[in-house]
Image (cartoon, rainbow, N blue to C red):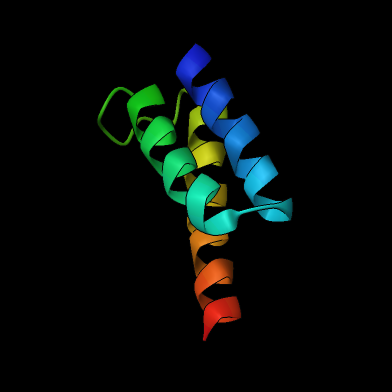
Length: 64
């Protein structure tokens, strides 16, 4: 549960600064927070995973 919350913090932080760094970190921590499988019972981890993907997409669009 704590890993998912930390991932959520990194995902929100990635929306504002260094998304190319914090985005993948949020995705990994979100995945680990879900227990290594797609488990939607851990809401902060799912949100961290989704926002991490959004961070990565926005960073790649900004770089292009």
